[in-house]
Image 1: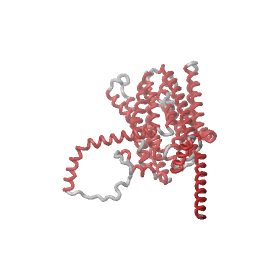
Image 2: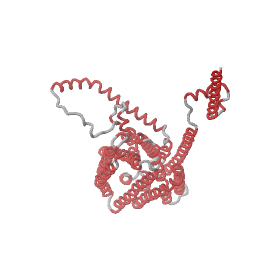
Image 3: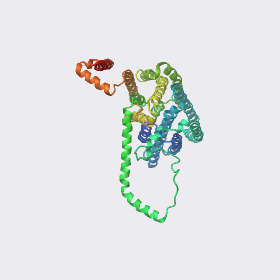
Image 4: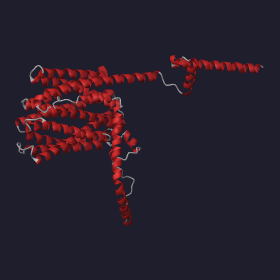
Length: 515
């Protein structure tokens, strides 16, 4: 879409920024409501529905853009038809982005963990393979699209996207169903049993079941039953408003509960660090590509740049497992974030400060992708290993939401710097957020160290129970120096005192027998 929108609106980045802003905002709102269904819905049914809606959204978006293409460019902003189509495009595209994000959470943060069954090495390798497949597709797709529009037309490229999504839907769905049937553990969800015991009335959070009607007999209603039901329905209409309000309150309570759970979870600062990386224009997204078009770079060069961007990401998926095996999860994330900041800042300063070629700018962004995807794999494994199974949808949904907010914030800033000449300010903002990402990650590492020290202390110093604790307090009061003694020493002194008491009792009993 960025190339197409920039071709329609040549003199401004505003439509591209609006498109990116709305397609970031609406999925964030939807994620807060629907992410819980990852924990409660049958895995295959959830992915099937998300994939279906996503493909329908892509095909509909292609049709709308093709129609807009043929409208009169000179009076486009004054045309009511354009605004209706553009709003529809924003809504459909946002729904597609939301479904894609939900599908990604379900597959990468739930299915993969179940398939690996606790093996951290298998988990790291499988994450790398899946990411490699995604990035390989990201290499081929932009190159193919750019070649098509370079040697044909943009409309031909749009038709290619629509037809490809339609043809690839059924094979993809078939593969997912085969995996679901091949691995029995995917059919078991711990949270399903848990949800049945809750008192929530919101249907959006209940477990879906294809066999809900099993065990119930279908009865034919008599005339009296119909009359009585009609009377009951009239009475129920008066209280329907209160029930709707109650459901809305339950939704708000669940959203607040999910936010509280996320903000107090041990992965919170790691998620904040990851989300900061989404406040950027240096990622071959809408704004960056639009800026390259403004600089008169050929479409073929932009397509090759996007392909190289993904290719270097694939290199990162090969490097990440080696770094993880050598340095561990936390230190690998720190190394990757520092190196990413180094390359991005180098390319940005060379272009905007030292007036070097734009290709230095491209090179800095492309090389930094190696370490960006290392960071992505580290975050994925953190969320997989440190988040409980019955909270995966909520926690990962919250992370996806704040990532969307971060992306949306970058587009809000772009609204104030919509002139392509001000793109240097957007680049500096992007560098600042990478610095924030590094700071949040250091906080996460520090909190992990503190929690590990607390756990080790608890293992070495188990809590004192019942009567022993009372004896320790009494001994502290008598001696006045108990605060300076260790628990082990106090307990040993108590044991020795008890031995003395038992010895004295035995001596007294022996003397009484002699008498």
